[in-house]
Length: 212
Image (cartoon, rainbow, N blue to C red):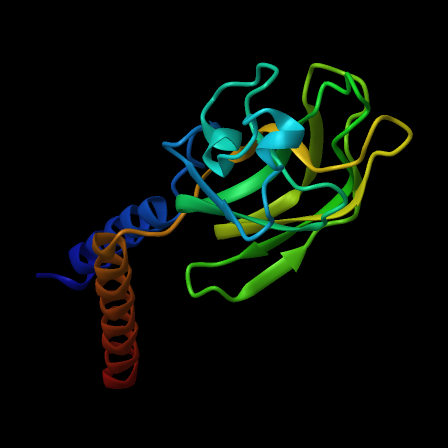
């Protein structure tokens, strides 16, 4: 192969591996429901005597149902952490919280999010957010993109007060984001091959210059 043809070939290969490595972002997703989120908590649920048997199943905050009397209710006055395990790795840009509809002015007051990667290492912590009060729609919270998130801790810091009682009552949660942009193994192989060939081409050019 001539030097000119070899150089042209390495340029084409370099362009190919660069395009593969820098492919456009994945489609935006709303992560809601059991296909994306597996919630769990050690917060004791509301006793049957107080809540009539509603709100005892933490899985209901990620079942896609935002209606009243669906979700999780904690025992009176309890704060704590709800783990939101994501079924995959995602780049997150927003969070939605459907608080209690506040018939009796109950629900989350303020909360904070902590983001973890697949190795369960803390990535970052959000600002403190104020939960929606007296609305059926979700409270929507945007933040700078957090990459490669595998788990989120939702820490309830305070409760709504002024009604009959005060307890955690969450109907549903969801995230906005996209699948994490993790290169496939083939992309890494192509990158290494391209870098090797570019280095080989550079060495050939140096040898040719020395020979002249």
